[in-house]
Length: 629
Image 1 (cartoon, rainbow, N blue to C red):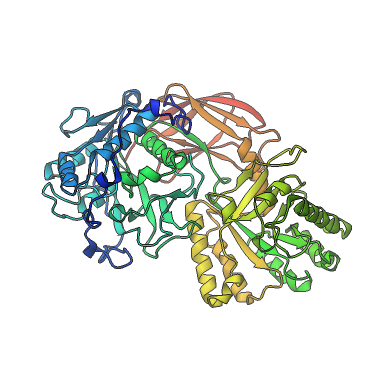
Image 2: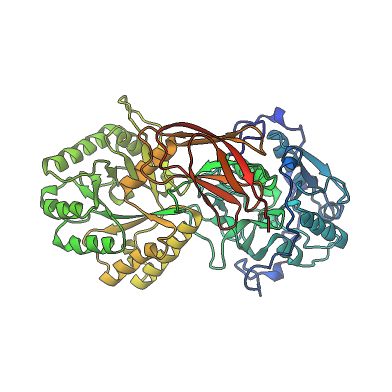
């Protein structure tokens, strides 16, 4: 996280930190005509844009001269209140000052240097500064040219919703200006489906690193203010359902970034009006990271997954019947795909499964717990759930089942609740697989609210399962359709930076071809997707939770401090560092050398720290080179 703003993120929500500005009543914020801003005839009945052009608009060529790093100390944010936009809003009965007011409150809350401007001839529109265009729907030709000139100088742009889609008289002129300036293609709008209201940030991007990937950002369904769907080369957030499903075939992205020449661009597809109901924990984090990146302030974060992966895949098999020789072929199939599976067993008649489970464990697969019998834990008193867990562990121990040294728990039929998570955290169990309701994002989290008195060495890791079991979908769709659906969902989870937990029944009813094809959803993504067992996932997240990285001091040459957990790191952890200049190289002055990698777009440097022993380290960071091309 960027440490060069005085107030820490998520801790400065007091009203005293921002100007006391009265928010207008809803009747002054919403036009009477829901189609006042966006013509209905541009879209079909589902909100998809008609006749949308393929691809993404090519970036406008810009100068490549670098910006001096010293400018970081005096750069500022300029929030533009367009006179043309203000007049257009007011003709529709809407107060446009809300857009500026909300930005003003946010920037003041986190002590970003900012000013409100009403003239694009302002001398502050110079290279290194950031111009915020808050739902500036109506722009004149002169305003459009001045905005382009500012970007060409090396100024950064933050734009929201519709930008320059109308002229000063309110006539619709289309998306061409915003699409070419922001390098996006508008594909539709949201708001027609009740569940199409959750913005999900993608993991490990330069502008979302403060927020867990897939965190649900709820938005109001406001007919006149529907967020725009886009295509872009670098999407960083998308519109998903509560259950993290993409909402439409044409694409569900709603936020993007780009860098052309010396200019940086952040685009938010939703208008400021929707901020009124946004969860500030996530929304402020998204704004904070975006403004910091646009200002070119260095920031640091620990990647969610081991290098070089951006997501993870876990193949899980639950016990629907006794394990026997029929389960061995699937165990071999997983290994042939480069995967070790996680198997979960019931204590009921477990001795009958001993031979097969022993063979699976010998192959390298993980054996963990499912329960005492195939019955949901949800809704049962804590004492009853604890008794069942103890019975489960005693039965598997008596049958000499080769339970993993770092076991997990995957409850029968996803039947668990908050009490289950509490009582499992009191057991010698490292992690728990949960359905989507237990975890807000799409990456593992820690269970911290325990009722037990025995302290744990490490917190219980909750691994969210977002994928429906392919076999379980056969009641509604065909096998081939279920396999295709699974493939699309795994691709999307990989794109978002999530963990994809695949679910199979032992002695599955899926055909061998279908089993192989579902695992191919992983193999097609294996260059960016970490194939791991639940135990490996949980151990990584414990280590990652103890790995700390902070920046301090002068933003042009900051000090990087890193804490490596006791016992070191079992996987290659990467610490991402946002670069103040594209394609700059990082030079570290300190007692220990570390390997450095760079993102393809040249915006981020990664420090690989697996080989460092446990302890505290400090380096002086210098940024060398400044191609920015």
